[in-house]
Length: 303
Image 1 (cartoon, rainbow, N blue to C red):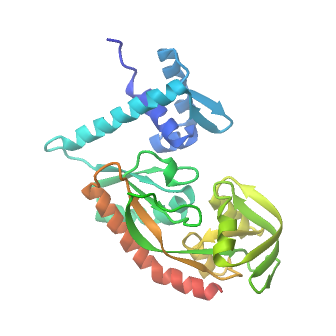
Image 2: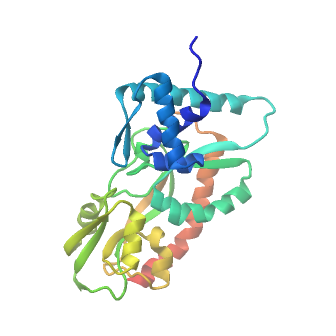
Image 3: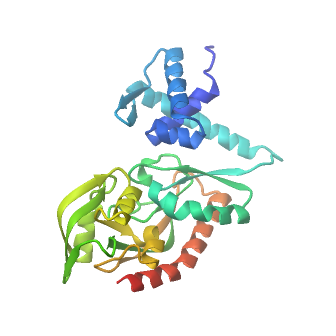
């Protein structure tokens, strides 16, 4: 029997393929980008097979790598389940939480200390797909709030967390002109992870955006920072800019477009929901409910 490769490079390979990025794999595993790259290269040398292809900043598995990833991922899941079933085992229950990076940075992470205070036996590992949680194959609980682009798939275990509120936001001193439902301005700030959201917002909200040009950024949180810097206007979910709308750093010239029950938690339909996953979903409901009143006040005061 051929000796198995060490566990560490296998974990580096699995995380890189699952997340599509060595940088995000390094963040998840607490290693450097260089260490992840070196471990994957060493694994390829050990196996004598090229496992991943590098295309700029994007990592994709080769056909052999995709087949090997399926086996490695299955093995890690089996190992995690085996550990969870050990009688009398002490420790924490690990949950993989899938969400977007901007949502994690601006909404989830600031609230996590409260979760750990209430649930010290549960540990959360974030898995962030570039475009949506639908890109993250292995997760226990995920959130989606961009109903402008996609809805949950049939069979998904869905927990409604609350409404979604979209708005075009900019600095109050940014030059713009409102004519009924039309907004004329210089620069539309767009994330290349959500290029379809703005035209979908225009159709559903019945508004017309007339920017002179478009500036694209790789992540939504950069669009928000650019808007705060006065570079232009961007489409944002109100939760993500709640503080900025409340203190007047950003305004919503066209008001807020509401999608009822659009903020959702999704439990992975490919596995029975664990008690820990259900507790996380209930906590998200509590946080969203506590947040709703403040978000509603902010929405009215910014119009």
